[in-house]
Amino acid sequence: MSDCLFCKMANGEINPDVVYEDDKILAFRDINPKAPVHILVIPKLHITTLNELDNTNLAGLLLKTVVQLAIQENISESGYRTIINCNSDGGQEVYHLHLHLLGGKKIIAPLA
Ligand code: AMP
Ligand code: ZN
Image 1 (cartoon, rainbow, N blue to C red):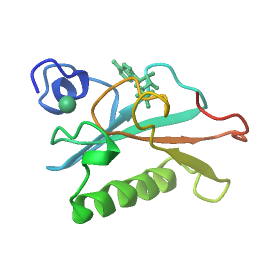
Image 2: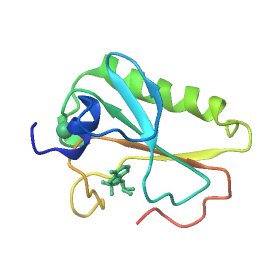
Image 3: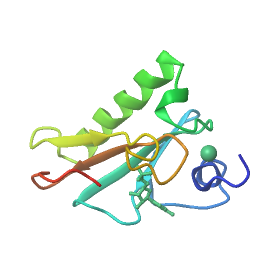
């Protein structure tokens, strides 16, 4: 989608602080981190919300990437939280599916 911020990251128009990339997935640091580690994991394919995620293989890859990044960031043992905000009441601000990975401190409050 041409006017989607995360699509622009996926196609290289905008360059975020990338921590992982493959042909299907991009992961980068959140510009407004809510924790010492705050990474967003996105499919390169535009999927608007979790409601539109019907590819179970891709769903698994996204979750597996979160775990790999938790290990890479040394928070897999201390712990972390992963969040998907969906639509307005879920607090979604960017309408391209993304998984938040938060850690590096005790995560008590919800992300909202
Ligand atoms: P959500 O509320 O789940 O849609 O989260 C959107 C997230 O995208 C927020 O945590 C923002 O800080 C983050 N964000 C917005 N613009 C950028 C950007 N240019 N680079 C990195 N993260 C961003
Ligand atoms: Zn998009």
